[in-house]
Image (cartoon, rainbow, N blue to C red; front, side, top):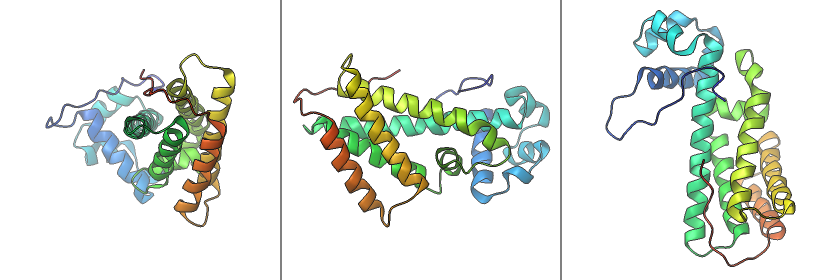
Length: 210
């Protein structure tokens, strides 16, 4: 999903943010306050404390920044989803409960004002440069969500397993497009679907990592 930008590196705890991280943090803030589409490259560079040439070297163009930010936000979504599955599975819960917990995380993360770009991609609300990446970003993110969760529920399992997971993922997405009256109502209905569609197995399996 990088679209030609440099791969994102995970920063060790306590280390200073890289140039790329600094720029992406600025871009995320601009998406949050609605100023992204009105901001020139030199303004982005100035806000991030880097030269405009450095910005072009790192990302190539504004779309490059958006693609890199989408990649970072998607990775955070997937990491949180994996962690939620492991936490619930570690307590002895069945796959349906693990899937429900992971989808609850997706719902919380994508609905948060702290992650405006990913929310726009998942709900189709992107504008300008964002909209050019939305379809591809959504397809990549959801394909990876389904793959990881299906592998977690049963590596090498029957195709019906993937279909069950995909159905619950799509149901979760529908609550982003058309929110329920409360998040609790959405979580309850998603959990019911997950427990109904995924069989009880009794075997502890953690999410597959890339």
